[in-house]
Amino acid sequence: MRKKMFKPAIAAVILFLGLQYGGIQFAMLQIADEFRLTSVQMGLLMSLFFAANTISPLAVGWLSDRTGKKPVLLIAVVINIGAGLVCIFCASITAVTAAVAVLGFVFGTIENSYTAALSDHDITMAGRNISIAQGIMSLACFAAPLLLQGSEQTFGATWRSLFCVSCSIAAVSVILLIPAPFRQADTDPQSVHSHGETGQDRQAQASETAHLRRKTFFAVLLMVLSVFVYMFMESGIGSFANAFVSKGAGLSHYAAWAVSLFWLGMGGCRIIVGFLHRYDKAIAMTCFGLLALLMILLPWIKVPGLLLVLYFLVGVICAPIWPFAAGRLNRGFPKNTGFVTSLVIVGGGAGSTVSPTVLGALARGDSYLLCYAALAAAAVVGVILSWSAYGRITANRPENKDTE
Image (cartoon, rainbow, N blue to C red; front, side):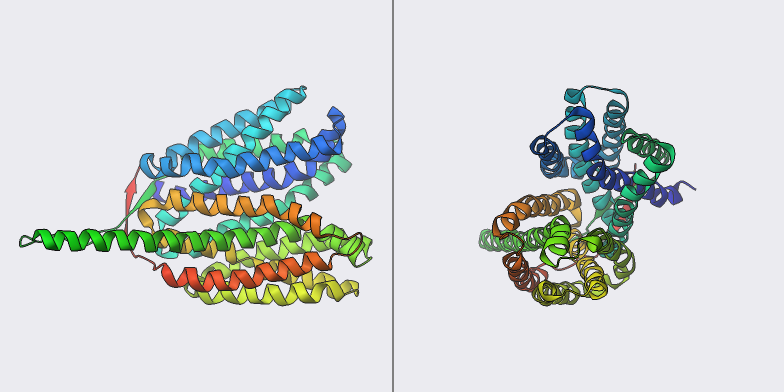
């Protein structure tokens, strides 16, 4: 019975995290209104969340590989509940600001830990499992603003209701996590030492090991850079879709639908495409290539129906890239899933942080041609990085061992 608790526990974690992540961005305007924050202060508050989210995987990725993902995940979820309770009951902007920073930090910690745990659970299916998890997360992010707005209009609920729901689901996830068995991926490499080994043999082995480490570092760097490029695109498209459609295309009434369809396409496709993880390299390169073509095409489309279909298609095409990159790295380095996952999240976080600033600087009034050109160029770079990175990282097939 305990063996069946792992997936429901992780599902509960993903559900509350997705609702909280998608909801907090929507609720930020209400928070600003309540505490009379300026738009600059509201932006800084959201940036604080993202900055903490980017930093945390580096701090906890290596720790989870040594202590296990389960204790790190449990502690992070409990801390998340505490920060959520602060948001519910405290009327001080100082307390809410501190809570938002903590929520950002534990968000990165939880995402890193459950992604690595899914890889450990079945390292050969890491790409599939991560894709499905990210799909559920995207759908939860898509649903959160709609649920929050609906409860506000129907019941007069405030932004604090978001944390009432997320903390309740988080508490359920703690109850499910405690008995859930986690696995620790392990490899069983053949010994490289033999009884007749000479000093010259050992020197040759050391030289080969150093060469392999340099190759490994370069391969991981290429993959993390590909995630940086992808998140530069995802964050740019998601953040600027409203402006692209309302100002660039002059279709302001359809801007909200474009944003929603983008995330809906991504969430639904991630659940489905996870079963194609064996073809991760070809799919990643194809997706980057198609994104380049769509970024060239989109600024010229003024027909509402076609534009909405294309934004949905962009979300579908974006779906596999991040989870496939994380899955290949985790399968390539099964003893360090926490650390390599943290590198993926940090690389993606850096891309997300840079993108709005770069695209904002490239915008020219109501013209976003340079923004689309930058996104198309990034997609071409993504094709090259994916071709090179996937070719250098081979997928190990280790055994998995149950641990507490």
